Amino acid sequence: MQFIDRTTISVTAGDGGNGKSAFRREKFVPLGGPSGGDGGRGADIVFVVDQNINTLLDFRYHRKFNGEKGENGDIKNMYGRNAPPCLIKVPAGTVIKDAETGEVLADLTEVGQKAVIAKGGRGGRGNAKFANGRNKAPSFAEYGEPGEKKELLLELKLLADVGLVGYPSVGKSSIIASVSAARPEIAEYHFTTLTPVLGVVRVDDERSFVMADIPGLIEGAADGAGLGHDFLRHIERTRLILHVVDASGIEGRDPVEDYHRIREELTKYSKKIARRREILVANKMDLPGAEENLKRLEDLAKEKGIEILPVSAATKSGLRELVEAAAKALDEHVEEKDESEEEGVKLYDAEKDENPEKVTITRNDRGDYIVTSKALSKLVAMTNFGNNEALRRFQYIWRMKGIDERLKKRGIKEGDTVIVGDMAFDYKD
Image (cartoon, rainbow, N blue to C red; front, top):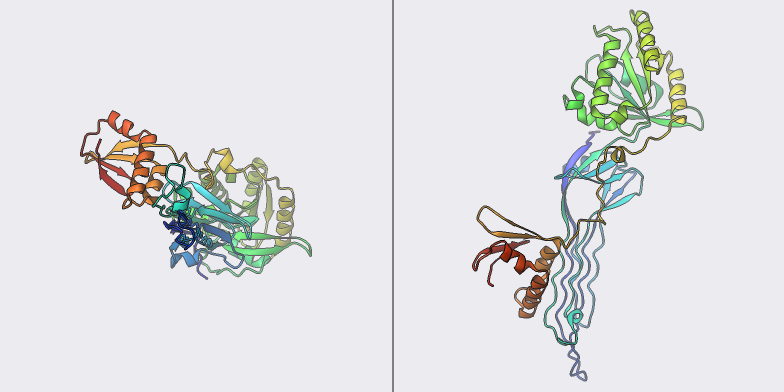
């Protein structure tokens, strides 16, 4: 099975339905008044964790998601139907980020967990909503509000309790194949494992844990060398690291130096991961030279204050003790506070966006005046400028917000171009 753990997609929530401009025309109601109903709300884009999905492979072929538009309002004050949410299924462990800013929008870890990532537009108001003491028969209605658009980066971080790390060909795949039902490809060459492998390790009738075989790391992995970032990402959620070294040094590498180099990569990538509890696993103890190196590895473990276990995946020697030690370490694990809180990473809340009333005025290379305001951009999108009453209402709101005064202070002149949202117009005092 192909494993995809990082992809980008585009999502567009549904636009709100248009409001209706209508008047009652019943035979015996000569002064029926306005009766146009409101449009329905557009579809939200909602991500949901599905237990039947294990990778992000489907997003390689389906990268654009559009929510349904809300139904338009109708006569007799009939409201349009709200569009059902657009559900996007993802595997547990999916982190959703804004592709442009890198902000974390959601971190989905449990089956059934949901997150609204893009809000559907509200329905436009029908003309019945604009009737008041001064204007008892308004002829205009609003268009529906546009739905939010976002470019998203999806990252999958494996939900494993234990992560096997180490250089290529130190025997990680052989260990996970021996202690679980996982069947990774095993061969006598480097980088046999190109995708993370999960296996369920049964301790006894009542206890089990999930082990991940993380593909072999190399120097520079924390800086993105090889597939370093892609592999290191999967260690972030593990509660215990089994650091596997080749005790025999049969390939000409020193296991003690290997340990220090991998530790350096882990520390460069994440200080939190570097603090995680680890067990040093001296593999290939059945080969010549292993006993001589074991003494040096034991001295290293004593210096670092960590546990060391000599094993042989080939002969199965020491693997039962390794499973028991891992289970004991997991039982003793105390969760550290979230890294995002520790390092001050801002978590995005779709419900608490920036102040929509905030207005900024800038100029582009052509000298046009660009008015940036979430509220005004929505007003532009929802106004029917072909209707004189709707146009007058827009101009009234424009003046009430003091935009004219601010433009004059910036030096605007008759005939200059003003851009708001998707609309450009010539300024007239």
